[in-house]
Length: 156
Length: 156
Length: 93
Length: 93
Image (tube, rainbow over all chains, first blue to last red; front, side, top):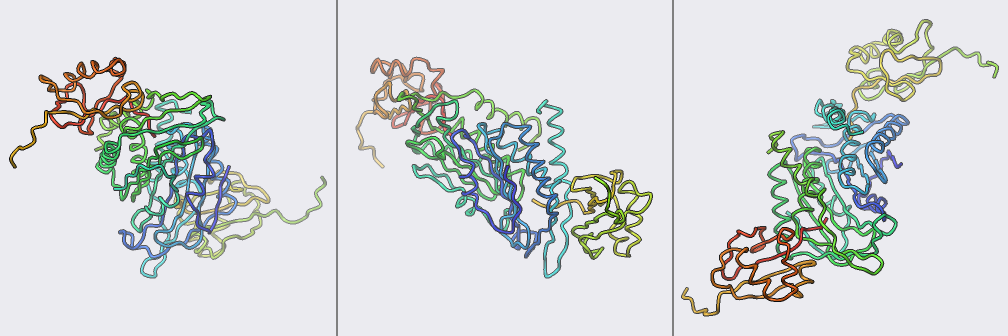
């Protein structure tokens, strides 16, 4: 169980080394970063707000759901808050398992649920104006997919 | 295009930083490690052999197939050869994209094809005896899945 | 334990993101009004606090609710001492 | 360019993993036998080299083939100067 909400940056190398273990075999990791000026977004900075206490408990709940579905050795979830700039790392999810498919699926599952359930909000700055990011239908769809899979494949 | 076959270890932090870019948004990464004594395997060491020249061209072909299927910004594939020990890193695959699902799918696709197509062979040591690892049906199945998906979803 | 605490029943209300900006506060303590047993009962009492509160809670379909840091909805019960949070759909990750 | 090279037609043969151990060589140069136009035609000439070669190539269904570093099969054409590789199913990653 390792859920961290922090302003500091993180290092994927240190996080994967912490998951490396004699029994592991497979580590899957995801990093989300701030897209910026050179992308179509035109974002110059963003500020991440969250709900202290509920954020951690939601992330732990999501981790526990993933552990119930797949044989995971370990899970790391790190999410940054505060002011971030294009190219900065925002979020890291990493899972380790004896099985490659379990690690891939669990990491994607955690990211999909983090996107729709963990209480974070982004305010983006463009041309000196700040606006709150709106939730995306595609993120809801990504989450829904897991329930569909569950019914179709009997995955538990 | 970054395909490397090397005896040296690698650092996931350095590799993900190299993929970070203003336009990226999502980085998915996989690391395979040597399972060892404490696992059921009882392996004390392994030696990885490969087919120089063909290995690199197969990995580049797999990368190109992934790029044709998903909108990827960049791809890194690193595979170690030589003698390795339990807990050591063997392989790293990382992809970057504006889209999280593309990065996840492409990384898993590359790993599945690497397992069945890239000319590497593992010899494992147990109790002082060396034996060649046998190919696994589950790896062939994982590769087949992508063609099934292609037919079922019209993914191209 | 005998109840020697004679303070009036109350709730902690929290707002996040643009709802926090509209209400002008991230956390406020409000008395638990008589007859309020669920989040939906509470809303008219909050919208009466200020024009900003009314604006924040205008479109309840766009609002997510948590009680004691667990997701709920307008039917979720509330009682003395609870923490009730209102926020827009989340956008982390 | 005029052909001043009068060397006999030949092939490079490569073996990997346990096939390399059986044949005792990772690479050998063999003359291209008359009448050999594909990998399948070549196999009997290789198994005749030694008992180890015969053992390595005994079960061709368990063997993968590459010609000039591209996957092929027993029907893949071979010609002077080609590199033909035999190896067991791969086990990297």
